Image 1 (tube, rainbow, N blue to C red):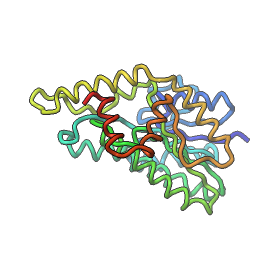
Image 2: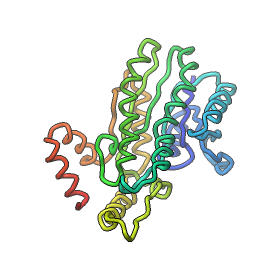
Image 3: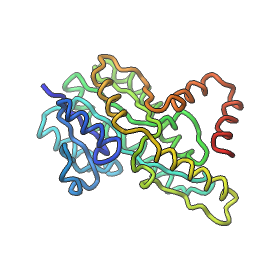
Length: 267
């Protein structure tokens, strides 16, 4: 019997690549979008879901269960970027960001857990980011939201163990997607003390995304995880140096690691 997979944010970017790859592998894939009517040519069904609106989450899960009567895999992929000097990002934008990248995924998890407990099986994959392992300049809120999801996953895994429900994190590096176009960018203000440093860092971040790897690499990694009997707590997918940066943070003294980041961002 084909496994039923639900992918939030499955209409574009990494989510779309994962959905298409798993569909080719014989999975019954359902993606989500706030505006599913825009994706009538998708290779798998797109259901309506906005991670910031709880009613759409419950409606989506109920609709899926009416069609399939089970959910084997949830891939919490929906997310947004945010950039800016921490001093200048409006508080409401910070809260909105956490609603999408942290609280939204938690609500989707809550919606699927009753069915997974009923099945006494299930796998939840939270797509985080290598940026969640370190506080990056002008990406501090993004790092914080992804890092929070990483830590919550560690706790959730232990709470779900007795129900035979598995959970893991997959932290991608830079991939060639449209994430930059969907970010909240604090404006580069002419009178800001951060004008030059933030403007240069923003250009560097965008160049990383533009030269990023093919999202299919993430899809292949997700497929391997689903095919693994006992998934690890954390996975990292990306360039060698991006993954190695996480290991360096564990090894190097804090100030030495901070200096590496300062040099990388030319700050």
